[in-house]
Length: 125
Image (cartoon, rainbow, N blue to C red; front, side):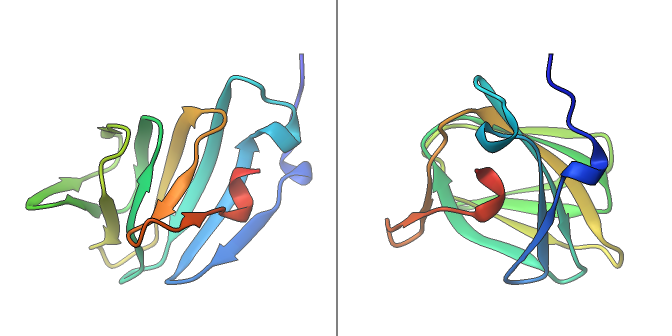
């Protein structure tokens, strides 16, 4: 078993009011699954992006809207969204407080910008 203590995690700030904390990633010893805690400031957003694997998003606090094409889904705390592989989507904090959620995905997930360029968020490693 591997224990990952809070003191061993690091929160990394990324653009647009976002912060990511690796909870279970390859760097921390996970081999089958990746778990990341995301925090987003009010008005913050994750620009449209694509992952090559399914992503599960569990909203812990705040309110976000996830957009994919013409579809917009508002999430409240304790709600879960499953984003299919290769679905372009964007996450916006639509509330007036920080929003926090877990991202759960298979290890080895790759991210791509809307342009098709591969992205490598530092918290996914």
